Image 1 (tube, rainbow, N blue to C red):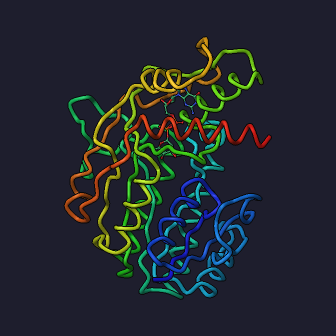
Image 2 (cartoon, protein in one colour; image 1 turned 90 degrees about the vertical axis):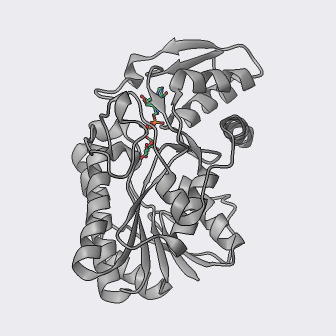
Length: 317
Ligand code: GDD
């Protein structure tokens, strides 16, 4: 099978590429700036550089790669900053999705397209509504969430209108080695690693610790994507979740328990958001019924791996 992974140089893109290669896929990628220096992807991966906000870049990628499956990961992925730049977030995520779907319609109508939404689409939900299912109400709380809802439903629309083989996913929080700053596990791990190496005071600055999230290791998440590209039903949407909620304070405790030095926690107002989803966890039963998928990597292992990743990053300078 030949895959095109958009956003291949990103956190999820690199993990997905490794998973596809290990299963014998030929992988092409599309990236805004090309692969970062020191990336661990083998030279057999062909990467096209370009901005999918330009329609001709999507067309060129499909004509060059001629993929049988397209994993559309390229997106603005941070929730917090989307409040400061709502239009930039909406424009980028919607434009890239539309250009890709238009190019698929014209040049690769038989390809499977994985459209990546987000659990943030569910937004505000009461504890009684948990775990969230694919048919739970959608009440997005951030510009990012609205942009993901638009991507999700553009996928549905292109399936209904043109019969494209679109498979939609709503991943809940995914963390792991390679994730950049701006996401909670990476933000915490980087500060712990910096404190251990004496690069900062032994303190960690945190935002809202009361929220609870459903964390899955990114390596499990990309396996779900890989399985769905082969077995997902066209037009359907699937949660990718662990099925349980962890408070951010508990994640912090796990991280601090791995620290080699004692660290003081400081609440940082600048890390609080104008609105923040208080509790979210999902039901992955539909994905399991379709593919047999279930999460395999315990959170403790993921946290340790994230911390090791940041220690290695800092050692490299
Ligand atoms: N980023 C960050 N940094 N978040 C913090 C911090 C901090 O220092 N301290 C507390 N938090 C809280 C946030 O307020 C939020 O309640 C929670 O930790 C998780 O924040 P993020 O890791 O930024 O994730 P998110 O839940 O907003 O969004 C992530 O998950 C979505 C799927 O549910 C992102 O990965 C999205 O791209 C993804 O769609």
